[in-house]
Length: 230
Length: 114
Image 1 (cartoon, chains in turn purple, brown):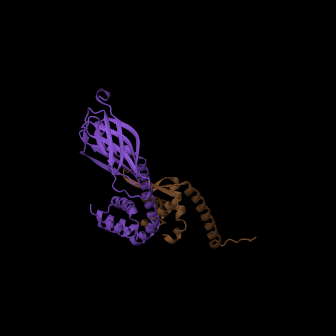
Image 2 (cartoon, chains in turn green, purple):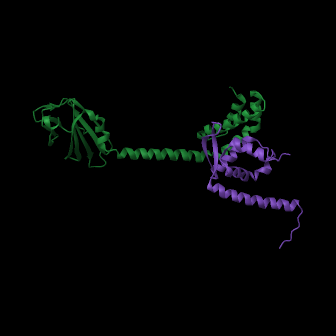
Image 3 (cartoon, helix red, strand yellow):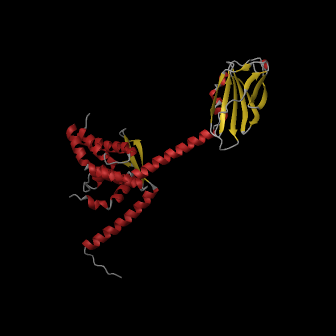
């Protein structure tokens, strides 16, 4: 059912409404009114076209109604309302994100079902002005060994100078692991994950050995093997 | 005889709040009720009701909600608020004062001013 007169009336009213978010509501309300009135005229024996014509006429001047409605839908207050809502939502999101602990945000990318074991660590080393804190070790079914750590510079103004290497990854059996990946996120306190592939299931110690630029440290982390986790 | 809308102007709030005090109503219902009760004395352009309803809502005298009515169609209903009830009392007082004054002038009643 095409009702061009009704549509034209509503379009004219809406053309005066400056706040876009209220337009749909106003449109629906006026449309319902006109349709109700048309029903009344239909019952009085008028045909569709006459009913539409009369109903729209009864509404009055679209321009005048639009101007008056626009006064009640102040775009300034409307936008303040919309912006306030967006800001509140944004703050809630930021807060929620900052509350997600590092472990779930970074290590959480490892599906639980792939994990053979997780070891919580609290090992901290310092190289010059850089502090590295090892927090977790996660061993996966596919042989990937994940070392999760946080690092930051004690000089606040320091920009990262690309120190992402935590050292060589070895095990007590003499294997060295080069192949893998690493990723980081965060600002002043960067959270990183270093993954090496095909870590030996027989090894009972994970060794992180750093020896560069005359700076060294060596961490030995005991790993559960065999029956301990199966 | 029809009364021009300027005259109703001053009592619009009184009329609308009175009708909404009885029941929650949507726009078209309000128009029908006004027609019926005033015996079509109040004939004004129906679309001009909405800026007034929205003004009442902005002032906090009414609030609106969408509901399926008896006909099964969704309509935007207006409901009087507590603030609206208080305003209605004020509007009634104003109207009484106004009509009394009109009667006194037009009726030619003689008053002794104290």
